[in-house]
Image 1 (cartoon, rainbow, N blue to C red):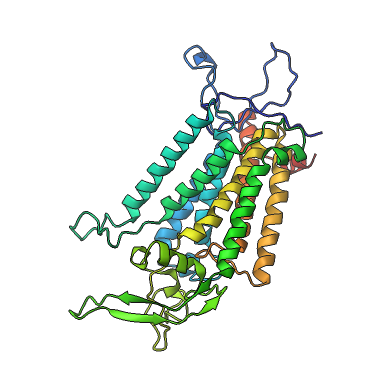
Image 2 (cartoon, rainbow, N blue to C red):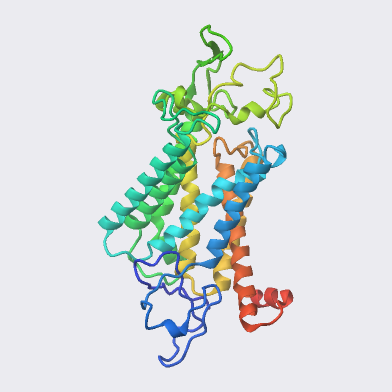
Length: 416
């Protein structure tokens, strides 16, 4: 029978799990060390604190693979457009990078805040970390760097980009951290139902954010709008393009509520000036790569659009909350098979829901961070975490025992 005893560690330990095969071993009996954790040096026990920081290796591997994937798509995406971000609807390899990072943040928060002495102190630290990350994002992506061959420095406040990748992660981190600090129940987890009850506040927040996103995306009326496109080779005034909309619930590049909210709140001059939809067939003869525009290209092809905008960051926060729940399964489930089984079941449901929503018309879209995209990428994150956890658990075990890795034994033991 599965055990759901919580893990009690020092409050300052981060990304830590304590795992043992028996919870009733005698005090003088040495428990088997979990191969998921780095080996400890028995000769240095007197010089190390009793509660030393230890890391969840599988999560570190997941993070490292995500960073490697980010470097791959950044460097190779320009050569192979097929792995670059999708021009609009659809899913490519590059579109998994952002959800993977957000998912990892959620899992990490569950392990970081499993114990904390004071909610006020933890809240202050979370706000300061999010603020530092947000400001760092503005510094790196807001326009302070003008290029290697440009000796200008400083930033144009009139055109600075306020949102970006790090800013989105900061927002998702802050919301998830506050949920973990203030909306966690006090009850003891003894079953799956009690696990849900303990964190029901988190699910309420995720449901509210999803509902708000859907209401705004499909309920807001998008009027006609216009934008200016600078002409660098001419001293004349910039060209002005008019975009005809007058619709409600559109998810196309020109007339969606995500872009309208960013134009109204942030200002069109503060949005990303190289929109991803300029690689669509309507806007590029080399689609899915950048290229010259067709003669009949629509007027919105060169309009600024921020892929990390305000409304799309709402669903990005939901991805972080889903990762938070996967982290809760690590904290409260003692058995490795129970953890992976629940991860696989939840991930399969998310992937199935995402594909179903895409089939009925709510398309996979990274720029809008659609609900189908949220579910599918979060499910893929869970499957990848379970796979890495499995490999680290059993490969490490066989390396410790200096035995060749037996795949049939590993798979059979997981089913017992």
